[in-house]
Image (tube, rainbow, N blue to C red; front, side):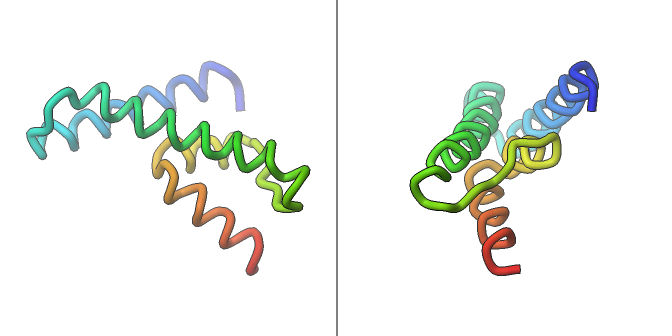
Length: 86
């Protein structure tokens, strides 16, 4: 997937999160959506880097980045469960 396509996907996901937060009437929806996406991507990177010590690897690809950005930390945990038990 090309860089500009990834940016479009991330932008659309950010807009969807913003819309959902506006519906829920949360304060600072853009900040919360960005923080959720950032935490998901950082947790994916942490799992990948700690794979040297734990033996559990999640390759960083377009799909895994998308799942971690959309679903956050629960998405990364789900990918770990799927990768290790299936």
